[in-house]
Every structure is written in C-alpha cells, then in structure tokens.
Image (cartoon, rainbow, N blue to C red; front, side):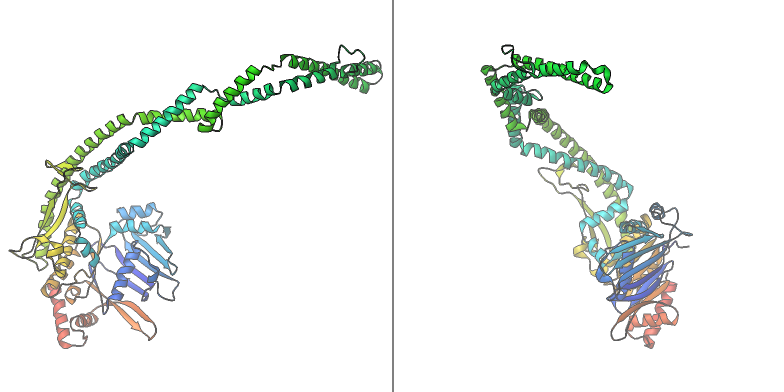
Length: 581
C-alpha cells in the first residue's frame, strides 16, 4: 500500500480558477490541459499551500480573497505531525487540514489543523511532506552550488557531521579574523586613544580630587569673599538680641522678653491658659539666649584671611580644569577616571590580544584544513555511489549509454587559504570543494558540465534521475513535478512515464505534463478545463476515466479528440503503460 499525503485540494478565486476541487490519489496522478495557465494554477495553489510566496496578483479580479485548502494524510509519528501539534494543530484520524488565504490587498493568513499559524510553519511542514520540482529547478541544477547541495544531501550523515563542525569553526574564524583586523588596522587610532587616556588619568591623579570637593570649596569661597559683611551682620544681630554692654540704656530683645515673662509668671496660678503662655515665653527667652551666643561665636570664628581665600580660588581653578575636560562635576570626573583606567588597560593589552588572536586563527585554519579534508573524502566516496545510481536511472530513461560523474576539486591560492592535501586552497562556508556534475551522453563523448553538455530533454531526465535516487536515500511522501519532461519526446517520454510510475510505488507522485506518453502511465488523470462566457474565463478540474481519458490522450497526441487514428494510438498507449509498469 502506497503511503500518500495529499488527498484533496480546494481552490477558490485564484487567478483564472473560480472554484475547483483537485482530488489526488495514491500512486501517480497526471495533470494535463490545453494551455499551461490552468495547469500552472494547480502548481501555484500547492506552492501557496506549502508556504510559497504570496502575490496579490494571484487573486481573481473582482474577488476579495483567494483560498487554498488541503486535506493531508500524515503519520502521527512523523516529524510534520509532531511539528503541527506543537503549533496547536489537531489531527483527526491521521488527517491534517491546511489552508492559506490571500487577500486582494496582499495580506496572507495560514491555518493548520484548525489553528491560526505563521505562514512560515507551512514551509517547515512542506520540507517533510512534499518535494516540488519544476523547470526552474532544472536551471538551478546547472549551478555548481546546487550540485554540491545535492551531493551533500545524498551523502547524508557522512557529510553532515563534519560539515556542521566545519561551519562552526568557519564562523569562529570569521569572527576572530574580524577582531584581529580591527586591532591591527586601527592600531594608530587605538594608540592615540591610549595616549589621550593616559594623559587625562595622570592629570586627574595629580589633582587628587575628592568626591564633593568642588561643592565644599565653592561654599568656602563664598563665605571668605564676604567675611566682613557676615561679621558686621552677626554683630548687629547679637546686639539686637543681647544688648550692648557699653550702652546700659539700650533696649534689647532678651530684656524685653524677660520682662514679659516676669509679668505673666507672677499671675500664672490664676489661669492655666496664661500659665501655658508663660511657659512659651520662657522658651522664647531661652532660644534668644542660644541664638545670641551662637552669633557671638560665629563672629569670633569667622576667618577673613585673604591668603586662605587665594588658596581656595586656586584649588577651584584646578578642579575647573578637570570638570571642563572630563565631566560636569568632580563626581563625574572620578567616574570618567575609573572607566578610562579600564579602557586603557584594554588598549594596553592589545599586543597580547593580537598574539592570542593570531594563534587562534592559525589553530582554526589548521582545524578547518582537517575538516575540509574529511569533507572532501566523504564527498568523493558519496560522489561515486551517487553518480553510479544516477547513471543506472538514466539507463531506465532511454539514455542507456549516458554516464554521470562528479568532478571534485579545489583552487590553489598563495595567501589566506587553508591547507588541504598539502596545498593551500580557497575555502568557504561549505568547505574547500568545488563540485561539478558531468555528463557523457554517449560512448566516446568526453564528460562535460551538464550546463554545457546536456540538452533540455537530457537535463530533464538527469534531474528526474537525481530525484529518483533521492527517493531511495532521503524519501518524502509526495513529489510534484511541473513539466520536468520538457524537451523530451518519443521513446524517451515513454521511459520517463514508466520511471515515474515506478517511483509512485514508494511515494505519491503528481506530474503536470503535456506529454501523452507520460500521462498514460498515471493511475489518475486530471484535466484543467477552461470555459469562457465572453467576458469571464473560468477554470475547473475534471477527473478523466474510461472514454474521457482516451479522448484527452487523443487530443494530446493529435489535437483532435475524435480522430480514429489518435484514439487508436491513445488506447495503445494506455495498454502499453499498463503492461510496462
């Protein structure tokens, strides 16, 4: 029994599609139609359902939104099911419902198992559920980077392990190299910064400021600068409170308060209220005496020494020099000095740090060289197996004499490389290997890069062969091929159809095709049909069975559904496909 994922996909108001239901079955499903637009919409819908880029232009003109809904069967123990449940999705009897809504304004929403989720989650699920391949993937396979990725994917843990270690060491080397370059290229700037810090710290240390000293000196300078006025005011106040011994006739506040106290004290026993007032007058008298004494002491202790005033002003000038350069207050200056000392220690340690970083760079380059060699060895071993498997598949795709090989090489460089195989070579985030897929299409032909040596049809079959090999080593439940048979015809098309049917024994295969030879091998045949009422074009999806399928294959063969010759050929194709599976 074939384990399948996609059961049904409903599409509403997407491009030319108004409302269509695409029912998919286990095994091999072929999607055909008269023009490519409708078929492309099926692929586009599935890509949207799997987290692809949303474009508001996909929404049908006049519609508010486009909606794609999918019904998927998944194993409850699979990575996709576990990830969906982590996001809050619910599975019912192994069925997972996914939907994607795209508004005409460009907003996009996703739901998985009845729960609203980020669109990115759809892409995560797709990695474990469906592999989508189209003609753009063929062009991607022409790039050496994609070829290296394909080889690494096939090699599995043999490459993934050392590649993970290599990537970590590579990132560390980039970080260390960046810091080392900054230290060495900015050495002059850092030296100037260190000199300025050292001068400033010496200036602060020479002044030896104390926290709050600037405020204390300001208060003292204010007092010394007005010493005579302060002393005169204190003397006048003292006389007003305590009197002048040289003027026995003078009246002072203390004498008057004392008289008031004696007056009420004599009769306080007659009224408690007056007694309370008498106590308060007594307290006033005591307070006046204390203040008068303090005034006398203040005047006696007041220093009007001009020498001390000059010293204070000189010290304030020295502190002002510091606050002008290093902070608003002396407290700020002291904070700057503390931070400056730490920064100076860091700058003075640059030479030691440069030595440490240089040694670490050398060690990392040595480590990267060893890991790059391990990657080369693992890729070389996997390349032989991968090329042999792909070559065997090409024999089943009407390329019996073709041979695929991998060229794995490194580019030597005199400086800034790592040593691999005793040679300094260029390296990058994925190692030092340059991987290129070579194809010799027939005996005697030299192996050439597939970008130069493969025709469109050959490239289609190479990519299909690669995917079939992947299906055996790193399978996904469902494969979607969008016209990967472009450029293929005749016997080769029959072999492509036969190989897709074999792939469908172990996975669900959906193929958008224009070749009747391929469609004939499908277990289920869907046709995208267009209707036009003169103003609006609509598309729908219809399952072809029995006579309808023969008519569709006839149309694909000869462009005429009712041609007897085309019908006979279509029936012959179906019979041959059933017999050749």
